[in-house]
Image (cartoon, rainbow, N blue to C red; front, side, top):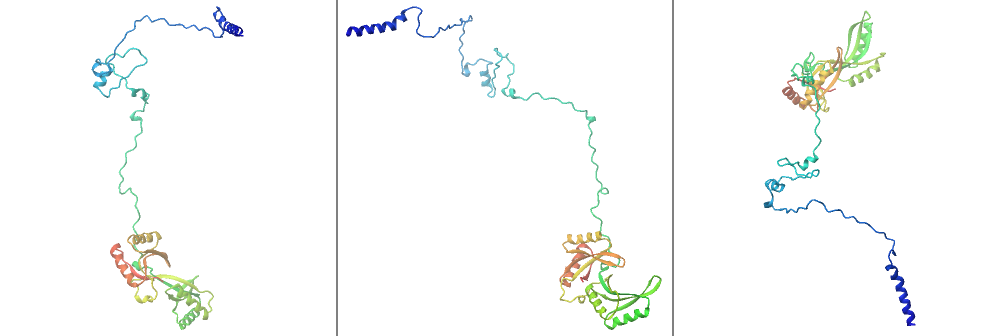
Length: 319
């Protein structure tokens, strides 16, 4: 048995190692690789020793420049193998980011460019006026058309006897009545009016009473204006009617002129307003300060307005 095992071992070793000893035989599929070694350069190699300290730097080198000027920047030209000539200025690194050269654009000659016209001084005559001065009040002074008068018109009568009879009957009931002669269509007539009344409400109350005993086809309330030459007396209004006093400064034929004086009042701190009144000569705009609760307050305002605005006023009542 031992002989058989020894023979088997020898046969196995022979199978493994005999093929390796035979020439031209290989157990692997790897091929051979040719490696070529470049020839040795003809130039002789030169060995240099560089000193990195400042004492060992040669004159004109970048190291010496760095010692002399701390802000000096050494540059290298990678496109050339040779060093720049001595004394040539070094190119800054920042110059690689410099913008492209500027392009010069031809401009027209100075004479061809239109020049703005020189500014002309503005004279006082050329400047527009801010606003016109207020026109003077109408004839009659500050109290022009200050009084409002209302009457009841009973019509015109060609028969003078009938007109006079109507006037007499109105007077019997406590009214003031007049018959004024006029010309109507070439004929002489009489116009009968009852009044005057200080307010339209009073005139309306008289009209209703007249209709009770006079059979007149039409009765109309008419308003008119009258000038006031002096301050209204304290007895003009009852003491129980506050806020019915004002100071009138004038009456104007245009609303614009009246508004100018009203604005002057307001600029001086007074309450000013404008109201209108129809007269026989047309419509008028009255400028007033107020209203005031008492006549005493109206007097104080009148004096203050005369001092500040140099404008005289009269005390009137607000009907």
